[in-house]
Image (cartoon, one colour):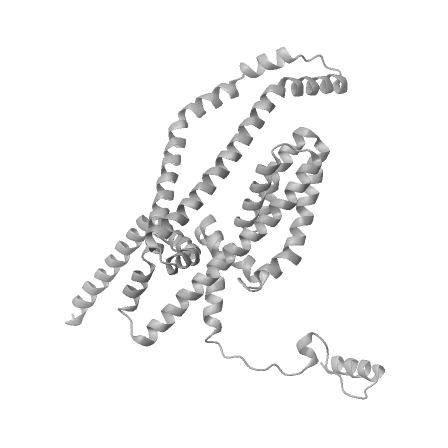
Length: 373
C-alpha cells in the first residue's frame, strides 16, 4: 500500500463528514437565514428615513424605533379595519343565509319539480356524516392552528429585532465589515451597499405610490357601485396588488368581487372587468414611468426574477427578487464596458439593402440564394 493512500482516505472521509455536517446545519438554520435576509432588506428599505432623521441630530436608535412604530401602527390599523369589515360582512351573510337558502330551494323546486323544504335540508345537513367528521377534524386541528400562529408571531418578532439592529447599527456594521477588507475592496462594498439602499428604497417608494393610485381608483369604482366597506377594500387592493408580485392584482380583486356579489351579481362582473383593465394600464403605462428612475429593469427580467425567487424561497423570494436583481444589475453595470452601436438598419429590426437595387432584383437575389442552398 502506498504511504499516501491512508492519509488520502482519512482526508476524503473528513471532507465528506464536514460536508454532511454543513448540509445538516444549513437545513437546520435555513429558517433563521431566511429571517435574517428579510430583516436585511427591511433595514435597507428604512435606511433613507433613518439616515435623514439621524442627520438632523436624532440618535439612530430612536429614529429606527420611530420608523418601526409608524410601520407597526399602520399595519395594526389596517388589520383591525380589515378584520372589522370581514366580521361585519360575515354577520350580514349569516343573517341573510336563510333568505339565500329559500331562494335556492325555490329555484330548485321550480326547475326540477321537487318538493324540498328548508327544514328538511337543514336536518339532512346537521345529521350528515361529513359534517360530523369536519367538526371533529376542526376540533383536533385547533392545536395545530395555534402552533402555526405562535410560530408566525415569533418569526415576525425575530425579523423585526434583526432589522432593528441592522438599521440602528448600520454605520458600525459597515465599519466592521470594511475593517477586514483592503481599501480597494472597501470602496466596492460601500458602493454596493449604497446601491442596495437606493434600489430597495426606490422599489418600496414606487410600489407605495402605485398602491396609492390603485387604491384611489378602486375606491372610486366601489363608491359608484355602492359596495360597502369601500375604504377598507381600496386599501386591501392597493397593498396586496403591489406587494404580492405577478398575481397580486387578481388575488386582491377577489375580495371586492365577493363583497360586490352579495350586493348584486352583476357588480362582481364590473369589478372583475375593472381589475383586468386597470392591470393592463398599470403594466404598460403607469409602472414603466414610475420605476424608470428607481428600479429600471426589463419587465421580462422582473417576471423571471420573481419566478426564480418563488422557486428558491417561496413568497419571501418573490418579494425580495426585484430589488435584489435591480441592485445586482446596477452594481454590475459599472464594471461592464459598453461600446457605441453601429448605424445599421438591422439593429432596429430592418434589413440592409443595396443602394439603387429594385424590389424585383431583391426578390430574384433572395430566390437565387435559397436555390443555391
